[in-house]
Length: 219
Image (cartoon, rainbow, N blue to C red):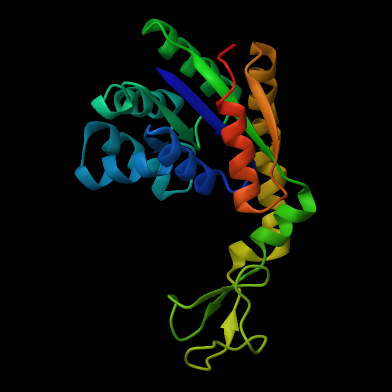
């Protein structure tokens, strides 16, 4: 089993890259957010334990998250490995993952750190605008700007920016989430399995570099 962990800040493109790697390597993309939603939707015991924390915007206890990931890695499609996205988020979670895999005779084959400059993260995360008439009409300053600034191309309604997407809110999120992420980076660097990839480029450029890294012989 070759388990890879994708590490990166919000806006680094972890989900996109994990999905591409999953397709190219033929192993499942295991996203912690999807696991939470699935367990909550299905009303599983783990989902019932996680829901109160998610509903109030708090972190789900590590014991619950680790069990969800552990159960997912036991499913038949993960026999050859998996790409973990959104987990681990903290050093204790990384240590718990190491222990879980060790009990099964495995380990993290590689931690892939998608390193993106802070100003690029801010541009990516604070560039989204929503149509005031339909939330399905979404624009982005960098990737999908409207033809007329501040106006929806489809129905001419004004665009607005959600509080979560405003620069001050984005910076506060980064200040909160980056320190524990760097602890995870340090953890895997100490283990000798960390590979850093420049995430400032295009999706294709980052994807090709990640594929080059995982194609290297196991250490």
